[in-house]
Amino acid sequence: MRGVAVLSLLLLLLVAVPGGPAAAHDPLNDLPAPTSVPEAWNVISASIDNIATCLQTGQLKEIAAHVSNCSPALRVLQADAKRRNDQALWDRLEALYYSGDAIITASRQKSDAAPQARGAYDAHRAAVTALARAYPADVVGAQVYVCPMHPLERSLDPATPCPKCSMKLIRRRIPASTTYERPGAPSMKLTATLDHPLKVGEKATVTVNLAKLNGAPVAGGDLLTMHTQKIHLLIIDASLADYHHEHPTPSDKPGEYTFAFVPNRPGPYRIFADVVPGETSVQEYVVTDLPADTRPEPVTDKVTSLAAEVDDYIFSLRFDADAGGKLHTNTPTIGRLTVAAPDGQPFKELEPVMGAFAHLVAFNEDGKTVLHIHPEGPELQNPAVRGGPLLTFKLYAPAAGFYRLYAQTQIAGRPRFARFSVTVEP
Image 1 (cartoon, rainbow, N blue to C red):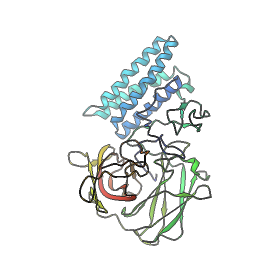
Image 2: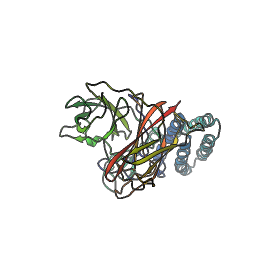
Image 3: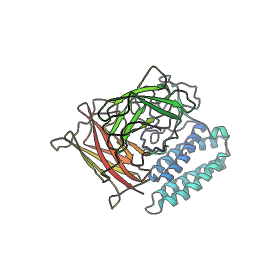
């Protein structure tokens, strides 16, 4: 049911809106029932591929959603088979219901779930591949295009504007997971220049240039808005002790953006630019480094730390880890962030920041793996709402090793960064 290596967590990918806030729509769990045979095949093909991804990444609990999304699609195909008076085709479609259910049943086994689910999936995919031969190739390979602002408005023709807002449609993606999706290979490159080499305590003005691989500049209109911004710059020093989250301002020159920050540690800094090109709707991370004349500090204090105090506010992390309290790679794990006020009482006045009550970013000591996590729930649209004291999220770490994790929140109009440390076992 259908890079530097950088990996991240996505909750809502297709809800990104160019030039505007993301809508509270989940493209996986809120997928509308198809209304035509080509759209039905689009759902089936995407869901088949997505089940394979879930098996590969160990996200077995997501499989049921993809099988479920295929049910209305199969009904559309059955109605078409009935119109064609093709009982044999109708029967083959009916059999697919049961082979899909077999994948769900196998994925929920308490032991050896993955191999059993893989076997059931292989049989199901073979049946779908055989079934596809009964339809024209352009029908089986049909694309669906949706409105970024109104994602339930869709068409098989990309030239059709949204009937509600007249916005240009983009190709629909049905994400494999609400927890983790591997970012696409970078389709652009990032370069940076400084007004002076980085120095501790001195504000540095940085100009970054974002260009496609063919050298064409990447303008704001080429990117989708994700969590209220088109570009998120995740900036970290070599010791993983000084994290900055910046949003650059476009200049008059296409592809050029500027920002300023104050480094608090010596040595160079690395920038991970979190972007979603409108052409693909697939999140990417593009990486560059900021030079310094000073030597970097090593990563130290590599011990688990799940509590932090920031301006007298107490932040605590807890994970539903294994019996030994260990986190493991390729294993979705529930995490809980709790915030207490300076008087020790549960704090319920977290303010929205970039459409969420917290943004959690974790950097692996390997220098190339970053996790970008958001709490569960829809993107916040009302700046007056408040949250806390408990935020729940899912951690999925594709690489083992030591991670420094930062929880960015906003309290009384000011950003607060709480720092934690975790180690992920293979």
